Image (cartoon, rainbow, N blue to C red):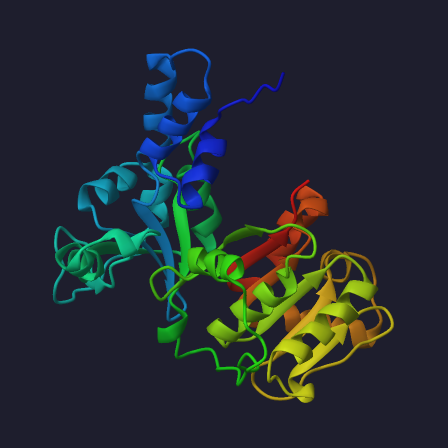
Length: 335
């Protein structure tokens, strides 16, 4: 007999990969020997109702809390932590109730082939969104306050990379022979849903081509990429995968290990290193110190993390805090 524990976090993970509340309840009802208690149904509704209502967007190096529902933003601002993190709004046209108003492209969920013409047009219609800016030093505190065990408005983290004019572009495309399979494209579609890059974790079985998924994500964002692997052998493999599947030039990719301390040339590039090299807090050689300082000071478009399931939580958090990245993508296989 197998027992499964439903928690707000597990349900949040379910809806984050595209499962709707009604689908979760329907499948559980089919698999359950007895009728689902009303308490469980209410718990599922309560845990998933607020997902997707709030987004954390980085635009032109400024962090914005964004939502199509202004009343949700007002609820967040009733919290002292978020209110203190908010930057004073500037006078601008289109402001409504002290929120900036903008248009974003509508998203199409999976199964759009079942929509008729009018429904498809409605789904792709530009949506009005409201937002306010927060202090970049308070981002982690704001994210913590929005978790299910606090305000229960879990934030989608997104990167508006196409409109990022501050960070230089990286000239890198997928090679013609690099053709992601349908399941790889499906996983990438969850990441690039509406012209922006969402942070998250992609889980694929061993041998399913996680490397191609990671390289494809880097090619779509076209910004500097920091790729973290578990050991020096994996670093060499990832550097090879970037050269195998993409058109990146040799001078734009470098390895940073105990044996290789390379630096890429140009304004943008790819650095492949290990978690330990970034998180190490002891004394370093002069060459290593220069490279790690550049890694810490640079603004990365994509933080690509391999085998995230084997990384200890304290090291994972340390790496996230040391490096400054717009989008974070973790790759792993099922346990």
